[in-house]
Image 1: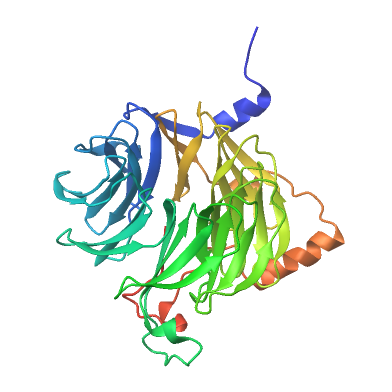
Image 2: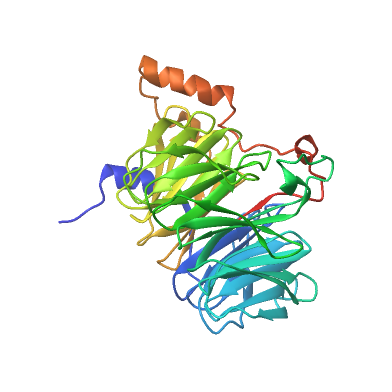
Length: 402
């Protein structure tokens, strides 16, 4: 007779709630700035809003109107933005759940989306990125040049307090960065829509990107198994990060430490200045599709239907969250609770308190200890509270990373 193993029972005991309101798989998730509202987008063509700080999470709104599945979602102020395979972007009022704007112009599905407050940027399989006016929905700019679909996006506001020298002429411009299936990333002048630099060297699609806290070094992850760093304003390659044995799917940069997830069933951490891999997060049985750092812990979402939590410093697996029946597609941590979404159509809420006390760390050898001293030196365990003024960026102008 079948039964649950002790490991499964241990993992399942942290489950607080399972919510099955969506009628098909959940593709994406977003959290409001104050952490009180969660939004999910689904294959069922709807988005839903959820309360995160009530005793029990509950659905507080349904957004209906798309004619195909929702691929990306974000919350900006009192509005939700959704991008869909129906080739449109919709803007919804959080209070009424009514659609107040529809943005059309892309010729294929919307892949990713970011918002600066004034503008919305979207990428698409139609080989373009577009900029839309947040208030009116007007298509302000089209960024053309990629030979294949456009995937990740980053927006870097102009460094208005710094006088650019002759070798850094882009420092005073608003810059959009795009990654593509054509093996390249490109930077674009927001004002003109012209391509500034092409970052060429990968031998596979650029699947994920990030920048350092100063907005001067670009990191690109690819299906060629590597991450590369680039001088954003010169377009030159700085380093290649090798070690993954599969496509690099996701990344997050925290201070001077980069965290990556891959189809090789591992997550990794790297010192960005030197290119050293400091830790490998093992135990996954499928692609690591999401990697996020909260309070010194590394959370991963995986195609094996499990969400895992590791100690960032030691690499020790601290806790497994096991109850989904398909790929975990998104996660967020709010006030000691972990929210996970899956292709199985469910949103699950977990107890994420006390994780640091769950297990005894394994012993590190001297080489590992040396590597982790570098991580401690560069503050790679905490999501930084970015002081944009220290980076020469005004408080109302923030780097936006998809």
